[in-house]
Amino acid sequence: MHDPNGGSAENRVPQSGIPASGADASAVGMARFVRDKRGSTAIEYALIGSLIFLVAAGSIRVYVNRMGGVYNQISTAVGQGN
Image (cartoon, rainbow, N blue to C red):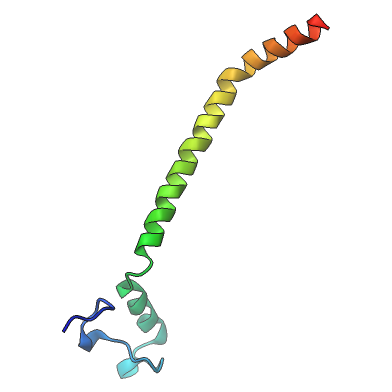
């Protein structure tokens, strides 16, 4: 029978929170975390979002570096016109 949690029946952690067969509680928690697939989509979206943010921030920085001189020239020309 298919287990919706991604593990087989013999690898399941007891729901009582008591580690099975004297295993360390942190090891049981880590095993549960490794088997859990529910957050993978959220992590993928977070990685894609961070990549988009980095590209946008880099593009803005390049734009500011290249256009800073142009804006200074415009500012100077407008200031001399007054």
